[in-house]
Structure formats: C-alpha cells, structure tokens
Length: 449
Image 1 (cartoon, one colour):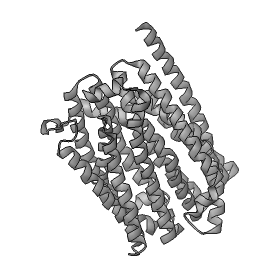
Image 2 (cartoon, one colour):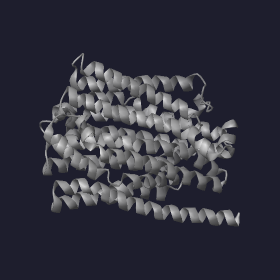
Image 3 (cartoon, helix red, strand yellow):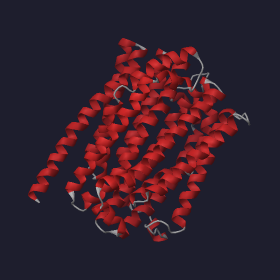
C-alpha cells in the first residue's frame, strides 16, 4: 500500500529521482564496466581480440533481449496489476516470469554450445577473429544459465519500487567484473578466456544476491510454489508486452551482425574492431537513458492502470526533458574529445584516426534518440503493444537496415557509418508524431472524464 501511495501521490520529480537515479546509475556503471572491459582487452591482448568480442556481442545482445522480454513484460503486467490492487495476480505473474527465465537459460546454453561454429561464421567472424570469438563465447554461454535471471528479476524488483536493490545487484556484477578483468588479463595473463571468466563469475555474484533477496522475503511479492505454475494467459501477456524490448535489443543484435559482415567487405579487421569500440562507447550514451525510462515505466504503468492520466502525461514530459539533457551533454563531450576516447583502447595510429572519424558520425543524432527511447518505453508501459513495437523496430529494423544495405553501395565505408545518424533522425520524427497523437487522446479522455 505504501508503494501504491508513492506511485500515485508523491511529487513526480522526487519520485522520478527515487526510481530513475538508481536505475540510471546501475545502467551507467554497467556501460562503463563494458567500456573498461574492452579497454583492458585492447591494451592487454590487442585490437584483434576486440574484433573477436565484437563478433560475439550479437549473441550476448540476443540473450539480453530475451531476458528483457520476460523481465520488462512481467514488470509491466505487475505494475498494472498492483495499480488495480490485484496483488494475487501480480505474484502469479512474478512466478511465471521465474519459470520462463529458467527455461530460457538452459535453452540458450545448450543450443549455443551445439551450434557455436556456424553462429560465429554467420555473425561475421573472419579467419583472424574466429579463435578469439570462440574462446570467449564458450565461456559466456555457461553464464547464460543464470544471467538471464538477473536481468529479468531486476525489472521485477524495479516494478515493486525497489530501484536501489536492483542497482546494487548490477553494481555487484559491474565492480566485480572490472576487478576480475584486471587480475585475469594482466597479472594472470589469461587472455580472452580470462576476460570471459571474469564476466560469468561477476554475473554469478549478482545472481546469488537477487536469489537471496527473494528467498529471504525482502520482496513485497511473496512468490510461493503455487505461483510457479505456468499459466498460458499470463505467459502470453508477458511475452506480448515484453516483445517490444526483445525486438529492440534483437534488432540491435541484427544490425551488429550486418555491420560486421559489411565491414568485412568494405573495410577489414580493424574496422570491425573500431565498430566494437563504438558499440561499447555508445552503451555509455544509451544505457543511462534506459535507466531513466525504467524509472518512468512503473509510474506510468501504475497511474495508467489507476486512470490518473494527467500524472502519466507529466511523467512522460519530465522523462523526455531529463533524457535529452543527458544525451546532449554526453554526446557533446564525445564530439569534443573523440581522439582521447579512442586512444583509451589502442595505440594503433590508423585505428585512432579512423575511429575518431567513425565515432563522430555515429553519435551525431544521439540527442534526439532520447525521444525515441522514451516514446517506445511509454507505449510499452501502458500496454499498447503495436505502437511500442513500431517505435522499437523503426530505428534499427525499418530504417537502419535499408540505409546500411543501400548507402555503402554508393559511398563505401562512409555509407555504413552515416547510416546511424540518418536512421536516428527519422526514428525520432516518427516517435514524436505518435507521442503527440497519444497525448492528445489522453487530453480528450481527461476532458470527457
């Protein structure tokens, strides 16, 4: 009840700070540890190792995508159930989420290890990058047995208003990964295997923390054995609502696969490594934005379920402003100091020169991408699946893929890099149109109600 009062009555600015700041901090730390991980690999092993990790990155993204589908979908249904005061249903949804995520972990690990060689070839591994990619992926797949549980559960924990707990679980994994990365790569000289081992051990620490949180009854959702019984209706709603998150993240995986293969044609191993560096860096720009919308979604979902539409509108407006301010600041600093950023990863003069050029192009439209991220999350939070999926797919599938397949034919390597800001611009435009339309519909409902 105290959580309901908080989501329904507390001042929006203060509430957003309470929910979004922990999520944003955990996302930012997560992005930074991925960045540090790549820096250690580049400095301790070489740029070919970065290229190998770039090949593996789509697999990790797909695992994340499926985990978020269950986690975000479940948290959305839980938020709306709590808003409607249906506490028993919220607990059944949480239980079904746990069952689904456990099955996912086993499925990914087994199939991934069986088909590891053809997967890496499809994902663009060249002869030079293949050994690095395979050594890393074999270890990462073992961690997929429990890491999806961490991702999914964090969304459920945030849905019940415990953003700080979710932040701590992410911090445990991030800080542990950085420490173990350094130890395994430099003093122990374990190479790519050491980097992967550091990742799955830190993920295991996060998984244990989350498991104990639920096991010891700290959660307001008291999941019991009867709640673990799979229910087709609930699983369908979880996956339907969460599909937008899956689409967005799997779309990200698809564009990396396409990018890797095209860079192998129009560039080479160094360009694939540059792409990997940019992917890690853009996480620092984008993941905090997802932290902001994760703070927004429980407020929007609860108040939409409670028919408090004016509060929904104010929350969305504040989320857009705050996310754009962050995006403008972070991308602006990157545009001012790209040389220093690329030098963190490598001392190769050619890589630095080409990397600076590519980075500036890729992040050109990041400030307005914030609108697109908030818009997609908003429609997902209120359970409107079709616009959520359209907005999720617009940037990466409907726009980026056609551009990146066409423009390189005329402009070569430049065409690959410039496809990113062009797709970002049109995706933000489409999102703005749909958001304005939905807000006007809410205004009419407020007047009539």
